[in-house]
Image 1 (cartoon, rainbow, N blue to C red):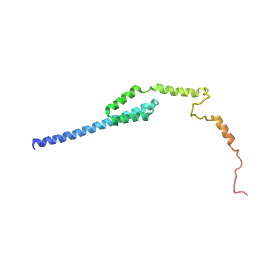
Image 2: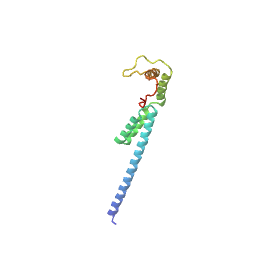
Image 3: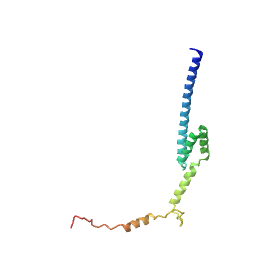
Image 4: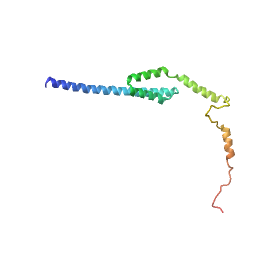
Length: 141
């Protein structure tokens, strides 16, 4: 074999090795993006935020600009995410208000339709209920 033929063979081997390296990098990148998406989704849900919205931002960052924007999105989420204690405290405050027996305001916000209380609803059902009587049968004359 001449030196020229060996050079072409070496170039083909380098091309195949480069293709394998590129495939490995792409698989690694997609794996990192998947792990980041799942983590941010779960973290957002645990903090009382929309997990789907956070995951969509990661997915768009992944396919739009690459690893650089993905890292920026992850770091930004870590910096601006709400604390878990604050979201749980807001939830606990709502539960405390509901269970404390405090009077609700006389006026409802616009767009809210008042509904009967459970006692009013049951009284209305009792009033509308027909008293039980003998079953009617069409077989008897």
